[in-house]
Amino acid sequence: WEIAAAEGEKISFTGQSKTQKFESCAPYVVKLTVVDKDGKKVEKRKNLVVTPAPIPETGELSLVWAAKLPGYNAFSSPAVADDGSVYATTQSAVLYKFDANGNEVWNKSLGDKCKATPSIDEDGTVYIGTGTTNGKAAVYAFAADGSEKWKFAGADKFWAPDPSKLSPSVQAAICGIGSENIYFGNTGTAGTVIAVNKQTGARVAWHEVSGGGPAGGCRAGIVVTKSGNLI
Image 1 (cartoon, helix red, strand yellow):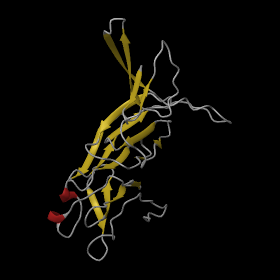
Image 2: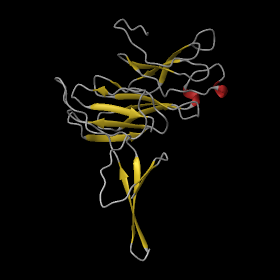
Image 3: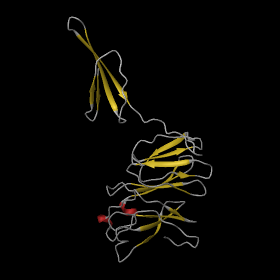
Image 4: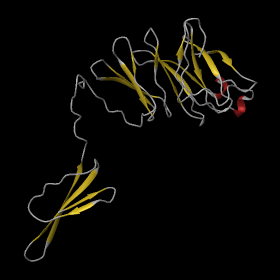
């Protein structure tokens, strides 16, 4: 017998059976070689994937449901709506909606990398930013049923002293929600804070400092106070 791991680990042994404890979770190739008395050989291979052991329930916590999201998502957190629906994104550029029981309701392609946590309005509208300085920066508004309400995109939509030199990036922007507008930051060149009408998706205002926008742009989420101030 021979067991080989993708990272180069290899184990060989003889006999009819063998109990093997794997030290890491990884794909393995198991090869059985049979040699008869005349020296003739026959080989059989099988792919084996070792997965982590289930996490034991401890204390007062128990697993209700789990969902697998393709792509790396260490930067964003899920958002939960009033009805228990859960919205989540990964850097695979997909927005997922799950119901309160963990069943996938729908998913929407965002076109480019996303590191942001979705923002949910009182009417169930979900706002999410995506895209780096590669020209694909956009902010989407989706209704609770998954239909796209509007998309804010294009360098001409983002403010800059010279729009031809603007490379907006909103992949990590978390939208702050006001009574009439949403607010998000641009971390690309000539970073800005932008206000967009919630109903139309049209830009209604922006913020600049010394003619060039906040130093380094605005990377994280924006908080809207009860008095309408932005933090």
